Length: 301
Image 1 (tube, rainbow, N blue to C red):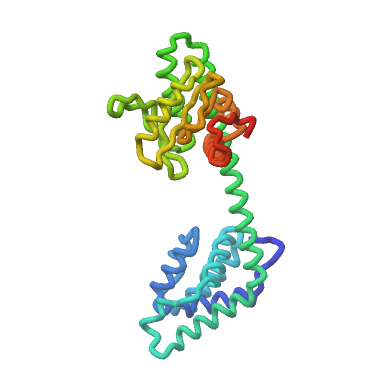
Image 2: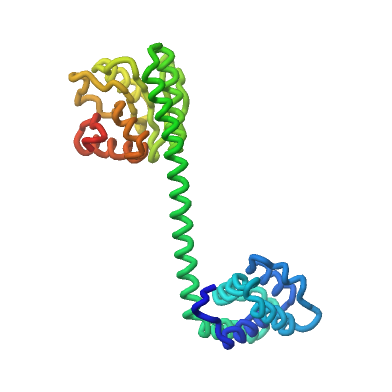
């Protein structure tokens, strides 16, 4: 609660009146209070043998006398009551509509006495939410970068492996972990009608087939073979070919329209945190659609 703006006696009186009339049965009032407060243990210490007004008076006065304990919950009650626009707990008991009218008038009176204060409090709550969201994002980014650092160490280790076949298998696992990190729903390598597919994933509503190469530069035959695999799948499928060592100069053909290409420097850019994998995929696909170029390195996007 804002220490610079004290709740007025009129507002406290209006809160007592509103709490006394927004429900008809004491059980309904107790439920409303319990679900509006963070610490509702105080409710079990209040006498409920008398009228609602007597119980409400005891509750509110005890809370205002011990703001060190009940400051937050007093604010919760003010917010909960001023947010009321309907009174379903009165429906059964309100034959002529007077009970609802009385409740509506009491809530409006509470709004009048707390309007500036409620606005300040809601702005503080929004600021708190933004701060918590920012802190959460910072923590998430730290975790993400930590995992990227681990993957970069693995990538550098793979680069020193001279057993190309083993490196190929480990590279597929590396890519699977990278795509998992960005929640792109990767699938491990599989065979389909005799064709070896290194993997698949889904991004932005489109299914992608994945081919990974880390042995030598990819040539036109490699690209043609992969394009054929992609174009024989569903029409909405696309292909992502990742070649750590890049392409031969003559590899690109204007006929290869259903795939995009990433190279080793693209991977390093992701692992260094300069660009996220989803953002890089999005930019590459957009550039391919705009220019027809399926291979544009990150530093040229």
